[in-house]
Structures are given as structure tokens and as C-alpha cells.
Image (cartoon, rainbow, N blue to C red; front, side, top):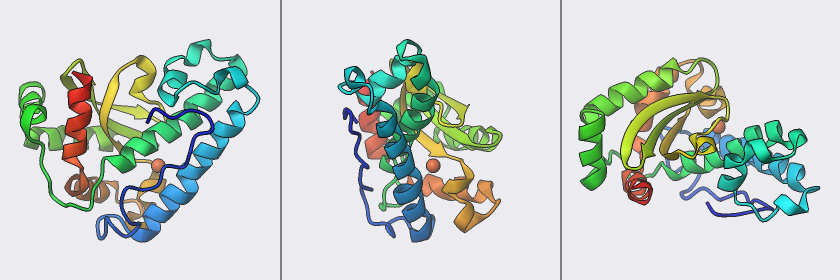
Length: 206
Ligand SMILES: [Fe+2]
């Protein structure tokens, strides 16, 4: 994720039909090739006229929002956030179904959240409790785990907090397949989580 301008459209790490039946090929194609691409294009267009910002990573741009030129701040928050959040969302899913957290991540989850089952309950509540568009997040503050939700394309990295997992609950993430049934999408998403990758991010955050 340490890329800089021009930011690429990172390919999905699995085939477009790799997450069926939980997420259809149509959903993933639109979500990645249309929605994410738009955020990437918008971010690059915003930065095109600012050569002094073109060596900054996405993380740096998002962490330095307040020091960016005023004319860029909202656009970078929305579109830079859109790129960062989607890249994490897609990377945190895998065709290898029904994995579970293990090792140090599981130890931290048991300590800070209660158990994996408690995690599912609380993360579901965060995802369902996000009014309108946004994400549910699992964040690590120096190894301490917490579940939060944030609206729109806001991202914990903007506050210097390392996210290790997120769930996109914008309607565009599920409407084509689930219509208004966000709860069913959220429930099915748990079987797609790439826990080995989340573990890697967790260990990096400690
Ligand atoms: Fe999305």
C-alpha cells in the first residue's frame, strides 16, 4: 500500500467470481472496476496539479489532510479514503472460505473483545449501526484491538490509527445481489475474511 501518485488501480487478488456465492461476479466487477476506479481516477486528477505532493504515499496524504491545500482536503479525504479503504476491503477477503483468526491475533481478540464469537456480534452491530454509507473497522492501537464504524470514506489512518480489517457497507457493496438486506450481506461476509492477512497487518501494528 506504499504507492504514490499516480496511484494504480490495484487488481483484485482473486478472480471476479472467486467469492461466489457470497459476493457475485457482477458485484465485484462493478465494485472494483467502476467504483474503486473512479476513486483512483479522481485522486490522481486532484493531485495532477500539485507536483510537491506527488511523492507522498496514500497513508501520508490521509494523515496530513489538515496541512494539504484547502482546495484539496475534502477531495483527498473522500477519494484518497476511497482508494485506501477499498484496497484494504478487497485484500481482506479470500476465496478460501471459513477461516478463523489464530495465534497472536486470536489472543488479542480474546483479551480485548472477548472471543471470536463476540467479535462477530460486535462487528455486526458496528456494520448494521453505521447509518447510511460507511465501514465497520477493526483497528489496532499498538496491539490493542477495537471495533468502530465511520461514515462515508473516512478512515482511521487519518488519525494515525492502524486499521487491520474493514467491511464496506455502502449500498454499492451489496445492493446488486442483496438489495436492502445489509444484514444478510454482513453475515455472509464473515466467511470470506482473509484472517492470515489480517494477522499480518496486526503483527505489523504491534
Ligand atoms: Fe465500496
